[in-house]
Image (cartoon, rainbow, N blue to C red; front, side):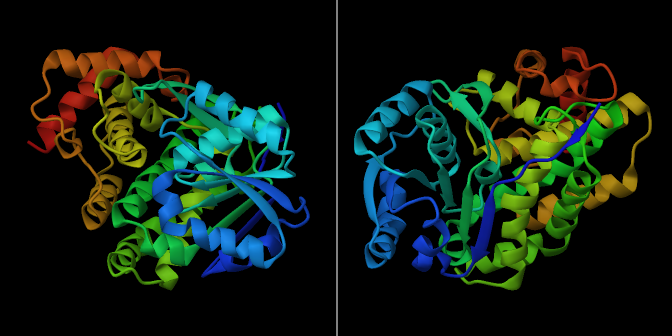
Length: 365
């Protein structure tokens, strides 16, 4: 079996970097379709437009309608094809990223991704998550290639709501523990091979940065200020986690999120918050199955969660006093949501997940 690693073509990160946007994308062309939602447009849209205008580039703005569905991607692709552009720019959050990837894939055009928060690791990967109109997870599809350019302006990240940064830390924090599980089970990664040593090292580095700098980065965003800690955590949330999950694999942490979206409607929290809880479920499952509780790891993880306000329980997700039926439904949906739950180095059944959910309730009751 071969090893493999894929990354975005180019990655740029820094303060106020979007003010020189065209410098980083002019090799693609000089006419772009910008996919953006109304909230993000009001926040940063004019700044992006001014940057392109001042550089002599042309653009068309296409508004995104809230949910990353196949129908929405096809609608936008139709508009993009009519504009005769050189490339697609996806500007916004995770679902704009997912849709922009699909549009780029459909139109066979280069893709530039500009995240306006560090809420997820979506920007760097070739994965596009598709949902139903009601937000229920449908599938994760692989694009022909990773984004050609990812541009991260850390002053924009600093001014975004702090909850988005914390959710991104929740998503990124899962990366190492899922990579470890996939390593132990010998799972094939999303690029079709085994993980490389560099990919596994990136997942480990992601974990180390979050543990060391996560709390300080959160304080920076609460003050709407840039800091070196924020710079490091932004890289962890977006680049290290994005390259890390794609080239190592996902496991129970993401499977739990997918399972919960099928049962809890509308899903009460953000993707990264749900995945953060999924990491807790994964660790508890590992401990219960092995019959050995890792006290040092558990303390490190739970103290980190408390320091940045990540959810440890279903109650923290807004699910008060879940019934046995609800817990079993989540467990069953988790196991039926795709392959992620079954990438562990042991057999995962609804009963196994159910026991972990019950154990977590007991631990924090």
